[in-house]
Image (cartoon, rainbow over all chains, first blue to last red; front, side, top):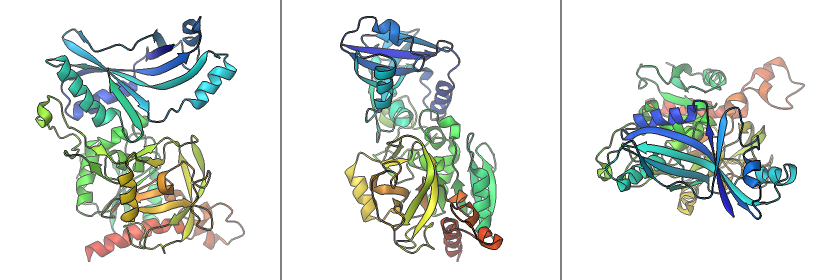
Length: 157
Length: 282
């Protein structure tokens, strides 16, 4: 079974703020807001109380500054307050989770995890006429700044 | 008159002092140029983008600085043939900016130029794809001394004019994201055909070996420094600026004070830069 965990900062996210201002400077005036979450996906063989346990792993979620959400499906583009919230997932081209997975499996007792991936889950709040246009702008933003395709892969949701 | 070099300081740059010293030791005048200065950058004869963590490596190493308007100005000066060297984080910025080895695609990235009409979109600049990346090392962050071989022909670029082909010298590395990589085999072929890989990680005797720690990060072609096609821009991951004097080299013991103060082989990079500028001015 595949499960996704998105980890959001509760304190101001300096990376998202810098990214927003950089994109603004690049001329992406239709971008009104941006947020960023750490992205993890886990393939588990017997979920059991996995959700309750994984959100308490402090190397992934620091309860003092993070909020974790576990999902079975990643959210799709939605319309909110006249803006389209388009999600962009950015992952390393080659899975770089080997060390982290070994720690989870052998030291923290998560023997149910068979594989995992990590990356960044961006949400772009765009002023666009249609969902297609919003996704097109999100793609341009992604290629313009959020990803270097020579070693990363991405997907717009 | 001594050549004037601008040492670029972005928020997070931390190698500027060593860089200033290395430039001065080569007989050039070095000036610290902060990213937010309003002054004109065009009077400088060359540019040095030092290492550090520009913009805290937000998004990716070098990604934010590569979009800074100052980089667009430096890019314009490089197009005139002026030398530009980026070391470590500076190299990451040059690669992210598409100056090393280049860009592909129909639309040239014009950082901060508003191309609102492109693709009939309401958005801004549309990036061409950069040809390379400085991806995370295969084995994480490393800080140690490496051997570099000048694999390119002498004078292939502005920064190897004083190196004989095949010569090996020592330079330290200190990075976690220094693996030159590309998905495009044509780019690798082009780098080889154009002799753009200037320095390669090698053994002490100059053997090119992909094994760790000879190749400390898994870089394609064992590349430690790559120049652009024209040869006036070079991105280099190791730090020659902190290996500029014999006293900085490992195991340099039992020598006189004068010998310790002499310039080390890695410093020929900056002396080459000076020679290149002087030849351009003639």
